[in-house]
Image (cartoon, rainbow, N blue to C red; front, side, top):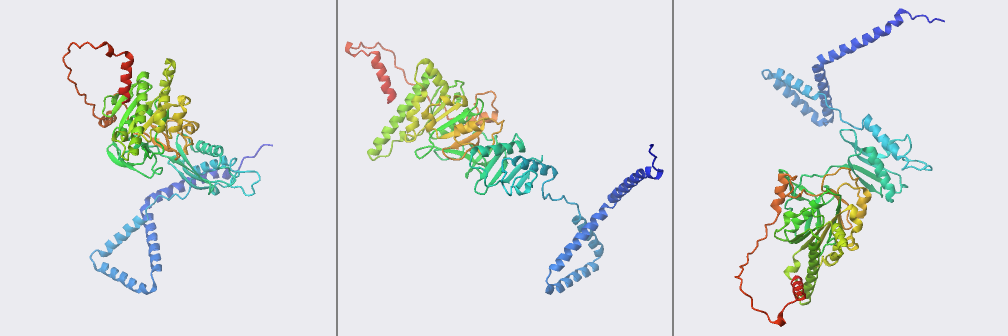
Length: 538
């Protein structure tokens, strides 16, 4: 059966209605634009009238008469002044226009996009924060996220920057694996590429996730305000430490929170281990420590990589040796072991005699050993002892003898470190991009933050003894002889280098024919070697 066409009035009525609505909307928009000043003034007059009404209602009854008399007197005075009513009208209109201006509405809650993100986070946490036999679950599919998320903040892109999550009491927050699963989930759902901090409150069953700002990389090497025995490893977050030091950051001076490592006789972490990937800034931290140690002590540098990273310190005052070869490294470490023993014996004899320790035993001696695994490999090939074996005496007794050992190596060489080095280096630093398990393997504790995939040189984590894991940014201390170094950083390092050692030229006498020695006084090679050993031990 053919469908009959609609009447003309019904088929053309919708089009005419649509045109009428568009015409009415256009007329209303034009009228609003034309009458906008009048609408603004009327809105302001209404707000002023409401404010006056509230003020009059709040005025006590015994003060309403004098107030009314004062207002009437002001109106009378204004009426008598030339052009007074006109000026008063202009003032009222101006006040009404200012009061009736359009203000940006105050945001009182998340918008539609932010609500969707919160709901997605809530749904993702349901399998981890719910059980089947819970009579009143806090997390349930299709539930209300407002009960679980008590605080939330977003950035300009609509991504979560802070989230406070309340979880049920039966969640196993005491197990590391359970906490890691929640942190990884929130990290993935909130957006990668940022560093998140997770604060677990087991007592209140709450988790606070916040986005951390990047640590500044513009702080260069400089003289830090510290006392003897304190070394600034780098800088961390403002709320991580209770102390700040003034630093020069570019053209301005500000206070920055430092990570301070304390050495000396009363230090609980007298030795330091630095681990990182190639190009992560381990040599930068070693140079920074060397420049700070030269203010109050002497240093010995042994470089296993042989790249000449510490050539700028050669021949400087306070630098006893800069060795790159295996033979020089072994001789220097052997001398350091004998020097540690000599200091212990001298200090012990002075105490037994009731005298203070000699001054030469109190001056700090720093042993900076870079890449001992390379030297150990060369020593094994050459049939010589491992240089780490010579570190046993400085590591075990260095705190009492004012001897500090700083060792740096890479992740792939951790298994070559001796047990003595692992045991006595209680201060640890990890630099460069690394996974959570790598950080835990070195520091003994996982960080409360998510390691970012891309970090600048000198960025990592530090832990002193049994303290917390702190984020760390090492001050820029590049090799001044490197062509890729900026002029500002090169000059900053050169200004901190000590003066070159002065060489005293000895007067060489005129050669004369030596008198013949008696046969019984001829020295053999064994006697010469014994004499050299005695001089070295002295």
